[in-house]
Image (cartoon, rainbow, N blue to C red; front, side, top):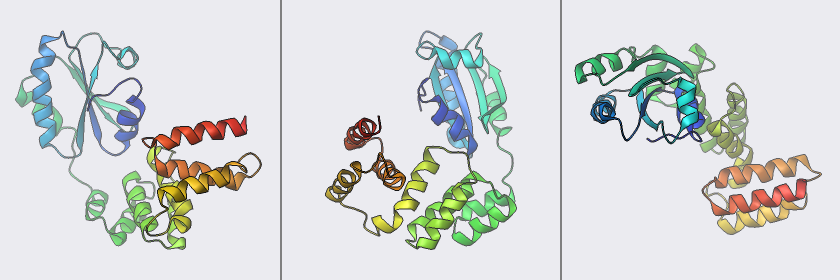
Length: 238
């Protein structure tokens, strides 16, 4: 994945709460970068619990400045939003393989429970680590998908354990709307009709405003209607 200054927060820092993110800082004019890049792709692709992102330092000066890069290629491993290891230069494949191996400790009991992934084992994982992000997100998603209002309320309580992120916002919106969306969800016309009906009340009604925002969250940023309705919301509020 190519990461930019604009996507660094989401694609590297937020993602590092779930897996170790290896950041390859490179440039098109850098010969050693062209040697190292394919090696990193191969070795990281064979590893578990590690993901590779690439940052063009010329096109993304803010990210480059964050790492205080002096020369490239420069490679950093980020876990839980912190640099845990790094190296500079085009290492040979055996050295890269050894470096990557050092980033992937054996799976813990919590890791094994999460890998099973059913409701019972996810609950066991949270008994061991109540704030484990992967377990919280997975269990919240299952509870919401069940369609049980009590499950959606429990999902909201679980999500409150985590710092806000794009994933927690999306799941929380689904949980709050679960009764309304139902098993099949609202149709496109139904969502637009609901948004139009709520728009007149968003200024003075906190519940209507939250429902409006939740519907936009469920639509997603890729839906062209989201930008249109966000502008309409801003106009009504300000």
